[in-house]
Length: 288
Picture 1 (cartoon, rainbow, N blue to C red):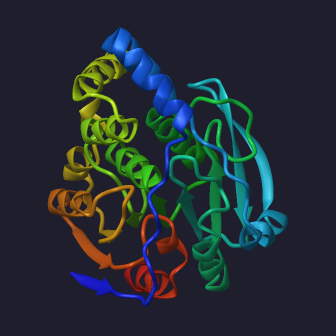
Picture 2 (cartoon, rainbow, N blue to C red):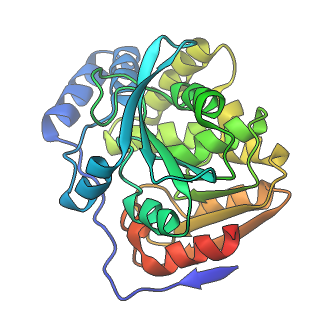
């Protein structure tokens, strides 16, 4: 296990707007089942953030193409960045966008690679207000068909979880890097319900809704569950001060991987870690 310790303050946790909290509590007072349905609706609605200036050059320099994903009848926006036959697939996390891993993309383009990234369904520049882990995974399989093969894959947060499942299901890459990936779906739901200041019973009922939509136990998609059959070399990167995804997730995923390595940082949080030079150098050392 290796570690990066920068001299920076960790990111503050994301704050839930008060009107959302008040609505959830009001519905909970009437019916926990109603509150669970409300929470599920929020759970599948990504927040679209304004693209920061540091990503403008990648946005301007990349070739952008709408790609249809037939299985879900939705589009994703594909960013082809750099020119090379050697390709790396980059997958952003929930409420992210295809240019979010810009520092990583820049680094590997300079090393002679092309990066393929994407705005997942209802993310980034795309219209719509609903997405899901399953749509991420299905989109990655379609990207592999249309833009692959990829030498390596790097995924942040939900993107890391999605790549683990895609590789579990047969996608071929030489090595994988996950950054800030979460683990058990039921834990993600509990964390989400806690952030909404709702009762644990709401989490239980919300999971039941998602299980029904999935057609089974949605925890089957959890990172540490699918990681058991991901045999390629995999680097699990996580920050000890990540307030969005607890570092225990990294340890669980690492433990489940047959061929895993772990690199922990401190003081970078959930998103700043993506641009840290020492982290990017560690990723390069692992992949190359």
